[in-house]
Length: 213
Figure 1 (spheres, rainbow, N blue to C red):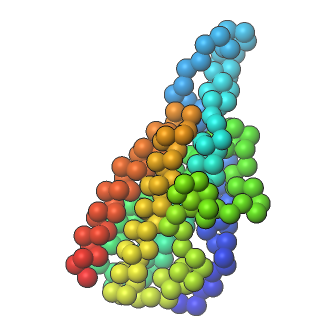
Figure 2 (tube, one colour):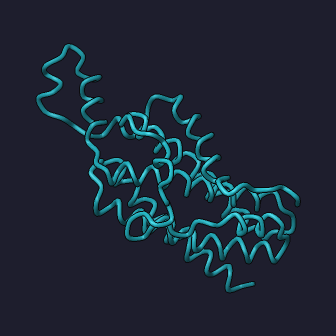
Figure 3 (cartoon, rainbow, N blue to C red):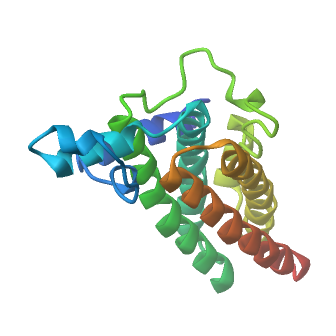
């Protein structure tokens, strides 16, 4: 294939998905948290409760969403590459389908949180995502990595995808665990725990598939 990837292709994809997510106006960030006192001072209790719930977040929650959106976006992009290839084992295409189906909606969910928190859907310009926090933006593929996956076919593509996605998932798990321990927003912490559970299981699945090649 000859498709050319720009260095910020994952970020660009995240931005386009973020626009779709912004149009919904609803999401986990606006539900699931009770408040006291604030809603009694207004005639619109549901709106007040929603606003109070949205306010219950900290810097860790914001960074988690801002970092995980492009991280997820790259996983979706990698999965789409595999789904466009021929002669890929059914187990691998099934895994790619599952990753795309899970992480696409999570991008929209996290975009909704950032919008409700009045925060940008991308990290500040110039922020080095590869060095954020204890685990950083771990597992992100470089432009060269993405070009290699795009050009590969058959068994080579399968092996490369599994190897890359294992590293990608391990990075996401580290980021999610940082949110689990440092986050404040209940929905964000809940998602971080779900990411750890799902992606650790997928890492084991991919390691088993890789061992069969």
